[in-house]
Structure formats: structure tokens, C-alpha cells
Length: 358
Image (cartoon, rainbow, N blue to C red; front, side, top):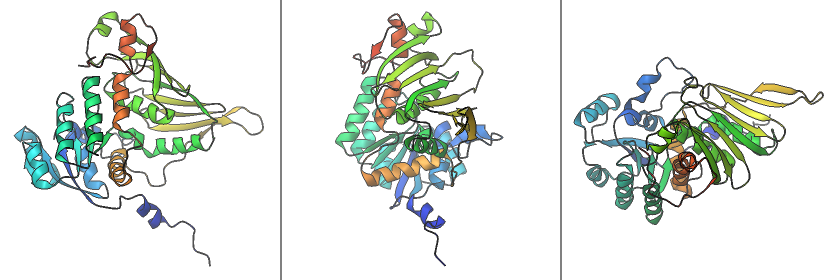
């Protein structure tokens, strides 16, 4: 009797990093440690989202240390995750614990400076949460210093690794909905908070840098501020794919949906990634027909998949799914700047690298 061509244990094993890395968290607050407290009773958010428990669950990495300048957060981190190598100075932690991979989950203000410090200390990879930093100049520096020191810089827009979106990308590549033509996002979220996830994901699907943007902010007063605000716009990528981003503060909370529209069909994600649909023509009548997007064979938290992906990026010598350039582009999409200039087309990259968010 012939053996199956593909064996389940081998399929799982083949996706694991080849080596085991020493991991640490810098920033032991909400994203680093506690955000899953907010998701109890929300079953369509696969646990965990916090970086510490995701690192514990991920293959190919061991959580061995953490750093934060707040002793109370360190004490809570120790109680939650049974980690005893705790530091108030991340530099001391890197040197003493020989850390390979750092989940950088501080607030955005110090993130650029810490990224530079980590890269110069010789870590192998930095997995930094979003928004990337405060200015484009800081983003440029983060990317340049990591490249100079051969450090993987990956953005923690973990939806880019979410297995449903991986399946959607595979179906598009296979021609299920024809060539991708446009993408639409409906969300009430602010541009540099949740929309960092959106823009990084759309960049992955577009498979080309953003070329120009036209933006519309709810009010002129909002547009003149540097606050993190909602905003709508049209984004055109270098390969001609178009995105419409509809982000207004008065839209229904959590009504986060995405549409990927091809020449012959579309894939839709509804209710903050809880429902996925494929619409294709009926083979006989041509009428639009809905089916469910195939679920992942091995469903897991997108954050766990992301951390394993970062480890694999070390081994292949590059980050493909969400590199620092994606984080910078999410920060750079000039919706606010277009509104300030009278809702005109803004070509990218932006010339003023000191434009600031927050």
C-alpha cells in the first residue's frame, strides 16, 4: 500500500525554524505582555497576541529575558511568564543574555533610538511593533542602521502572517479571482494605529511600493494637527493596483473589512478578520457565487506565526512578509499631507522627512 505523498508531521516540521534562538522583550506593557487580557470572550482573535506568550508558544525561539524601565511592569511580567532575567537597561540585557531576537514593544517615541542601539549591539533580528516611529527621518535611520549591521528589521503587523490572508494570497497567485486590480478597506481606526496593520497588509498584497496618494481628513483642524487621526484616501501602487481607504471617526466601531478585487472575482474579509468569503462567477450562469475562503490546515495565532517567520527570516537572510520598508510606507502614506495641500495628488516618497505623527 502506497504511503501518502505528504505526511502531516513533516508538513508541520518543514515550517519550523531550523535553529533555536534566544529571545527577549523590550517593553513589558500592553503589546509586550498584557493585551490578551482584553480579548477574553473574543474567540475570533486567536490567542496569543502579546509578544511574550507568542514567543513562548513559537517554535525555534526561547523567551529568556525582558527589559523595561518600570519595575512594576517587570514584576508583573515575571509573574505572568516565569521569566527571571529582568533588566531596566536593555543594553545590559543584550550583553549579558546574548539575545538573538528582540520583540520591541515600547511606545513609539523611543523606538528608533532603541532600534539603533539593538542593531549596534549585534542582535540578529528586531520585531518592532507599530506605528514604526514618529518621523520618516527616524524610519530611514532604523532601516539604514539595521541594513548596515546585517540585522533583520521586521514590523509586527502580524496580520501579514495570518494564515487566512496567506491562503488568500495563494488563491490570488493561482488565478482564482484573476489578476488583482484594486483593494478596499472600511475602518473607523486611526491612520497610524490600526491602519498601520491595514497599510502593511495591502502593501504585501499589492507586491509593489505605493506611488501616489490623494487624501481626505474629516476636518481641516484635524489635518493641521500631528495627532493620530482617521482619514480616507486613494492609494495607487507602482504596478497600477488601487486602494480605497475609508476611515472616518463616525463609522461603526470594529467594522473593519477588506476587499481584494480581481478581474473575475473578489475575496472579502469582514468583521475584523472573523469572516472570509470568495466571490467568483458561477461556471454555467456567470452569476456571482459566494463560497467560504478555505480555512488554514494548521490554524494558529498570527503573532506566533509571525515570530516563527522572523526566525526563518534570519535563516534566509532577508525579511519578505513585513520588512521595515512596509512600516515606513504605512507611516509615509500622505493622506494627511494631501489634505493639507488642498486634497491634491502627493507623489511618494515624501520629500519632507521631518513630518511628524503624534
